[in-house]
Length: 158
Image (cartoon, rainbow, N blue to C red; front, side, top):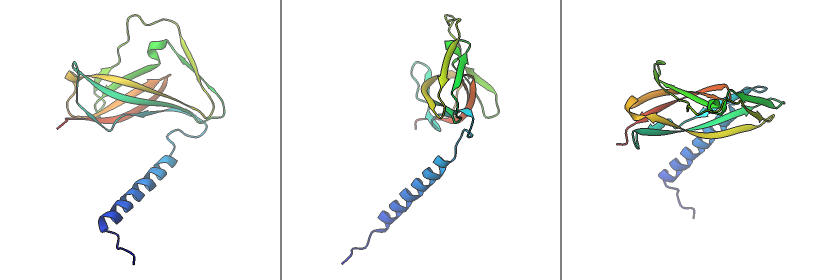
């Protein structure tokens, strides 16, 4: 005799199936068009406003995607300008930007992203906690002179 499967188990399987299907569909969408190079920026959608020494650490994943058939040469004015950012409100009001060290080298920085390859780098943006309140923000990024942006929300840790 076959035992009846409880409703909560069936519901759990249905939810897992929907999540898998949505993930597969979303994975098919390509944020960078075929034949081009572009930057994909990832941040947590909701970042806790937990701070240490007046700073909120926001992790940022940078993916420089080359979907072309040729290698792409990368160049920055110097090592300090490989990764730059500006944080704004959703209405584009300035909040904070990256400040460069006074000791930044004056020599240019060079790199390459191979054809059909991805350069992935993880950075931490240190948000000055005094400038922020719970709410929505935009992070605009330049990485090897390619631009991208991501939206995030700062939330309290209640």
